[in-house]
Image 1: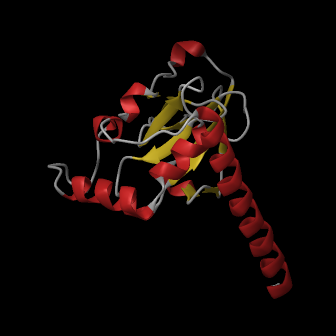
Image 2: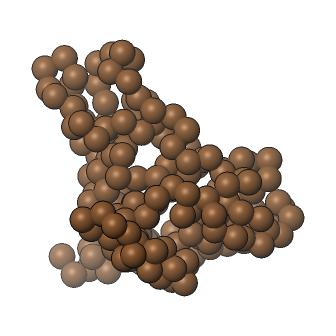
Length: 176
């Protein structure tokens, strides 16, 4: 299958007509290998929000930086957050959960060979810096096992990531 058959990219956009009094914003440099460093809060009544704060996100949406894929600015939204926007520098990938497991797709997209493939495409782009387009992601081919098997694989890989994060936090605390 192609990812375009099981996902939508950038399907929800924010308009200032929405008049959210507060927004929470994530830029591409504030996420690395699934770890969010900082989500900024803006009170839109007296603060100008970033011009790139346009993409709405929901739980299980995958964020994938469109610039320099080899810098690993990607992640998956694990919980709902009201008025949450991300930069237009991301492709926001919404998985059709009747067909595919978001974590299975996330781990597929974050494999070294997929990142390398997308980086090669980015380096051939005509933009000022290496960048991919949503269609480059949509055209990726994937072999999908049945949905239950995808869920088991996604859950297993997620548990490994969580264990690594716990051990990293323990090491950081011991070092401090």
